[in-house]
Amino acid sequence: MSIYEQLQKKMILLAEQYGLMKEEIRVQTDILTAEQAIGRPERQDFPLLKGKEKMVEAELQGAKGQAFTNRPGFYQGTIGDVLELNLDDNFARAVFVATLNALCRRVGLVENTRHCRNRGPAECGRQVVTFLQNRYDNPRLGMVGLQPALLAACAPAFTMRVVDLDPDNIGQIREGVLIEDGEKAAGDMAAWAQLLFVTGSTLVNNTIDFWLHVPGPVVFYGNTIAGAAALLGLQRFCPCSD
Image 1 (cartoon, helix red, strand yellow):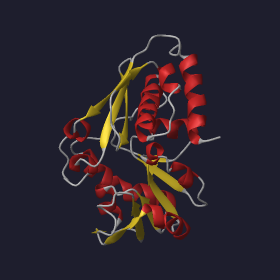
Image 2 (spheres, helix red, strand yellow):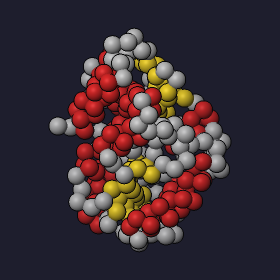
Image 3 (cartoon, one colour):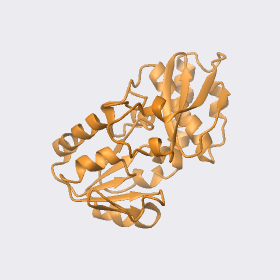
């Protein structure tokens, strides 16, 4: 059973348990501007600010959930409609994941489902090294998905490798670390790393299955994977999200 099938089943149970499946609950997913999504952070090299990715936001009875995607768009329908989506592209998966996050927030399973803003990204970076060292000491760290503030914090503290899927990032040296091609180097890095630090956006771009089945420990980061982490018991680092 795929992770999406697992999440669909759990989403159905939650919606039915709280009487949300039968009601005509409207779920709207809107594209957020960069400032709406992340505010005015200290760094200016986040993918959101560079236009590389967009944040979509679903709202369910006042509860909001978000998801990163490179295929943004608008959607409106019931939770039942979302559950019938064919999750074969990044747009449909973003709608599903954002809706899942909103539902999990609405029923109280998770609170921090919206991206941190303003000083939040820098504060996230200040906390990450302590978080990882307290749990895993001083591992060889493999980062999946370039997140500038987290890389800037981790690079001085750990021996690192980073993979990314953005062609503009691949081959660049960031914080003294080569950004490798995620399609070519993922397996080698997974075998090398003693701890993997993986963006939750893998849940939307359909690469998460690989990282769920690597032999070593995995910590996911970000708001996109908030609901899935709560439902599936995945480790997640996202201390400053709203």
